[in-house]
Image (cartoon, rainbow, N blue to C red; front, side):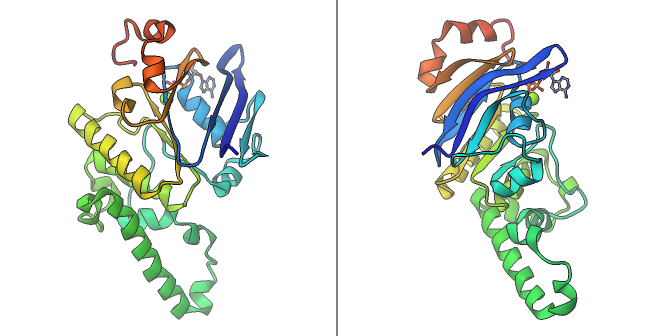
Length: 259
Ligand SMILES: Nc1ncnc2c1ncn2[C@@H]1O[C@H](COP(=O)(O)OP(=O)(O)O)[C@@H](O)[C@H]1O
Ligand SMILES: [Mg+2]
């Protein structure tokens, strides 16, 4: 059975259909790239999948159970985690603390535990730090070397890595990455691509959907690609399948960088 199955997903804002009858499915461990020009509905699709927006029509099923219409926190608890196009972190917390905030056990921890069972709480804290370090280790020593740096003092590209780590910390089944390479130069972008390959390798069951405006970024990274244009899926398949598609080439003509 497919892990995530989306059928005819649609949302209208007034007269604008931002996402129109989008369908796709994703198996465990599969990586899907979503590309499309600016304004084509990529972020809106993520907002639908993560429960921030309610669809006007269509269905989303996770492990066969419908989840469309559920509130964002419910969907997150069911295993769909995301990052944001413009970045979101606890800016005044350090790197380890940011990841700990994402850990499953932090989210479910009782605040009374600290009062009634300090020894147990301490053990949990040590465990949480170890887990956070493990997750940071996916990116080699890059974040580990900056473990006690305050998030706002991190270099830009590392902030984006930290966001990914924090999302991974909730142990999601599906990870949604909204333009993780936004604002990066080509060298940083290439490094990030390699990092995403590391994520894939270290968590083989994790399904990832990555939104990107740049075809080059996802080439060689994803298993399948979906191309959005004016909210509609105009092509879906392997990169090789979609690269020669005339509609895709037309959608990208005259906007080389997709913005
Ligand atoms: N909350 C909203 N209200 C009205 N229009 C919206 C809203 N969210 C997104 N849209 C519209 O949906 C379309 C797709 O936007 P978006 O999903 O952000 O595109 P992308 O991420 O592909 O650049 C745009 O026309 C945008 O203005
Ligand atoms: Mg967007």
